[in-house]
Image 1 (tube, one colour):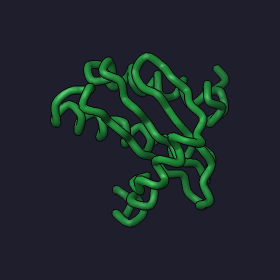
Image 2: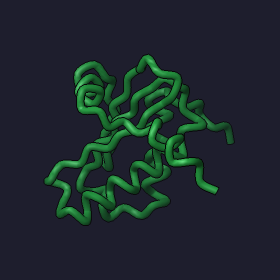
Image 3: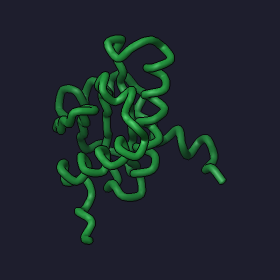
Image 4: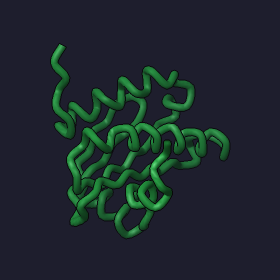
Length: 121
C-alpha cells in the first residue's frame, strides 16, 4: 500500500529557492547518466528533486525521466540520512537506459557520495 499523499509530498524538493540553494551550495557527483547535487537542509526529512532541461528531449521523454528518477529517490529515502536535499539532473543517455542499469548506477553514485554505506558482499 502506498503511503498517504501528504507523506510523499513532504519528500519532494519543489521550491525554486531551495533548488537554487542546492545548485549554489550543494556538493556534486557526476556519472554518465546523471549528476547528483546534495546539501544538508534544516528539516527532519530528506527531499528529492529532479530538474530536466529541454536538451533531454520532448515533453514525453522529460516527464518519463522525472518519474523514473523520482522513483529512484523515493526507494532510497530509507537508506539515505535524514535532513538532505537531493537534486538529480538527468543526462540524455539516461532516457534509453534500462531500469536495472539506472538503479545500479544510482546506488553506486550514492555510495561514491558517501550518502549510503557500501554493501558488503
